Length: 211
Image 1 (cartoon, rainbow, N blue to C red):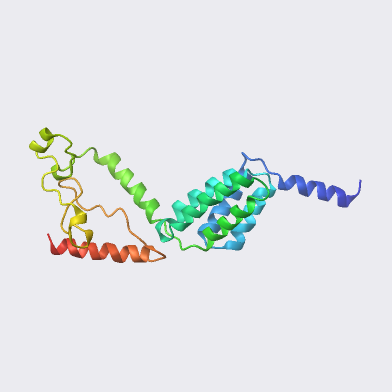
Image 2: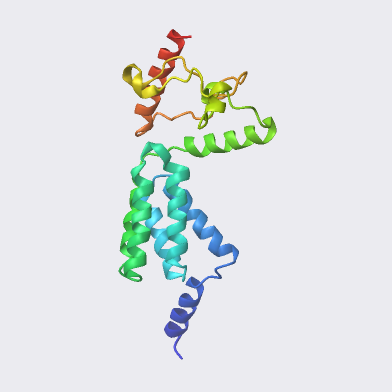
């Protein structure tokens, strides 16, 4: 038994980490933070490290879907679709061929514009609803499938946005009565969210003119 052989065996064993232990979660943390930090080389390195350590590619694929929704969001909605496509490719091809699609995915996620605005908005809305309780649906927004409901004014006064100028019913309110605008969603000035922010400002100005 040579020293070189022993070192090689030890090296192989050291790369094989406990999938339920600290090293596993430290490595996936490094991968996620490398994607969030827009470092494609680091993201690819940690991805390959996890594959080499025996991580299930399906687990990594699920994490990529989460990264696309949490750290990229509407700054580049294509990221979520690409992550889902990578999962499908892997399911069709398996290892090792399907791992190339996952590598393509992690590189795309790393270089995509970043936004956690959707993630923050969802958490803020969930926290608000949990502490605020149940507010009644305004009458003009209620469903009216029967004549009785119509007679009770369900849906009365609702403005069909598609029939309005620009497909937008300026001044219409969709929140419960007495609830102020919560501002859950705050798009960032990156990627597609730049255009989304511009659109929301335009709609807000139209609403202000019609209130």
